[in-house]
Length: 275
Ligand SMILES: NC(=O)C1=CN([C@@H]2O[C@H](COP(=O)(O)OP(=O)(O)OC[C@H]3O[C@@H](n4cnc5c(N)ncnc54)[C@H](OP(=O)(O)O)[C@@H]3O)[C@@H](O)[C@H]2O)C=CC1
Ligand SMILES: O=C(O)C1=N[C@H](C(=O)O)C[C@H](O)C1
Image (cartoon, protein in one colour):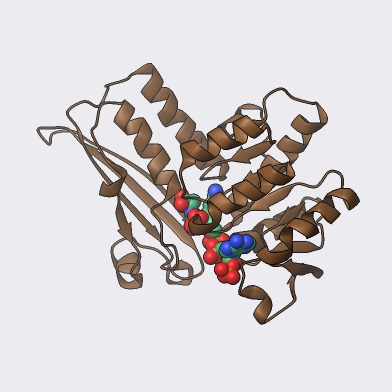
């Protein structure tokens, strides 16, 4: 497995891969400025050589020859997502992508058309994936069940996160199908540390290091009925463990020459492949 290991999720997935005894290829893609200050990152005692965008095409061609089962894991940034997908597709490299943002429909269409093996999902945490699947099933079984209700969505993340939560956007889609008119631009973003601690009850230790506190509140038109769904995650471990599950799932599909090439995390969960 090769990763984009310079960021918070990349590091965490690399640690989870080592815990699961998955072989880490000793290279990691990085952003253009990273190599100005260092040449390697270390994960669990393993030195990974940084590969900046300027040399990534030549490097991946070499790595594919040396590691025929190479799979790449992408936790870059919304600004980079389309160029990263172009890269995996151009090299026909199987990939697991947790990065949020971009034009998701365009990405799915591109990967489907190229027939590159991939798992792409805005959330890799097992129980959150199950929650997403449950909301999706509810929407499919009972479309319009919440017609007349008002929806409020609030999500808090570390202040370095610039985009709106991809998970929240995906969940909102199910509520829209249940009859609530709502645009993702109405999702309320909390990025100020003071509000995170005082209003969202985020532990101070997780304000900067990484957290994802989501609340979805649905209130009936006359205000007499209220539903609230909440998932609050401190740290990165749940996503990192799920990412390793996705890699093992994808490796099995490749080995079995599966006809389906593009998957999401609900597929991984349904297959019973989340630990
Ligand atoms: N699916 C899921 O379960 C989860 C998804 N995420 C998503 O993952 C993404 C990353 O999150 P997080 O790790 O917290 O962010 P970080 O900012 O910590 O890490 C992003 C890393 O990507 C690097 N990078 C940027 N551009 C490129 C490029 N072209 N090639 C290679 N590397 C690049 C950055 O390098 P530099 O600093 O040099 O720019 C940085 O090290 C976000 O979209 C987030 O929403 C996060 C958690 C869970
Ligand atoms: O950036 C994060 O931290 C997270 N990003 C994903 C998202 O945008 O939904 C998943 C989780 O919320 C953590």
